[in-house]
Image (cartoon, rainbow, N blue to C red; front, side):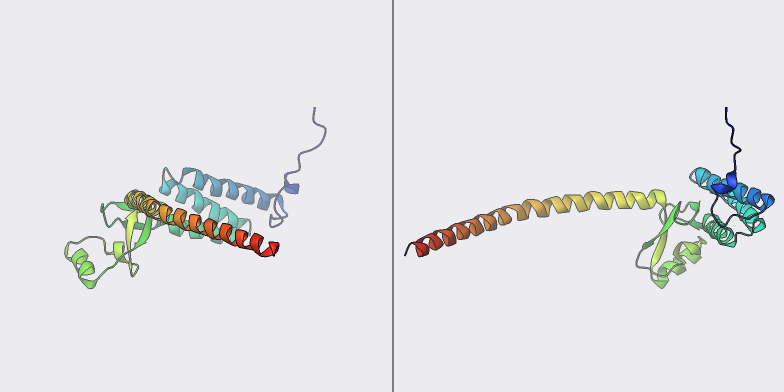
Length: 185
């Protein structure tokens, strides 16, 4: 049926190691790296495990750039913060929690300490930590109000623009009539 041998190294990127063992490490590392993103939304812990394996295999394959990339994702997925609103601990920055701009005073940080809550929810000056559930609820509500307000402005401005367009069209017609009269003489 097939007469040609399968040669996988022809389809691999140029940073792929020359030796078979290195290519094996590299391919297995890529598989683990991509598996991490397949399970991330279900379990950041499993994703971190895949990335740890991928990082080690990239290192064994001498692919430092990808090893570093995997290491950066490990740090990102491992990080934990409590949500300012629901006070639930979430794992995975920019996946399950994000920073939102907010006005934070010393009083707020003292209050968190006095209540023995997680001070890391305000660890970035001028921002609070919100889980993606609370953050998306705020964003969705803000979008709803922004759309309502935009529609109000549109409804208010539309008659004004229509009036201006009518006046402009009337002026264009008047100029055209004057041009016709001026060309007759």
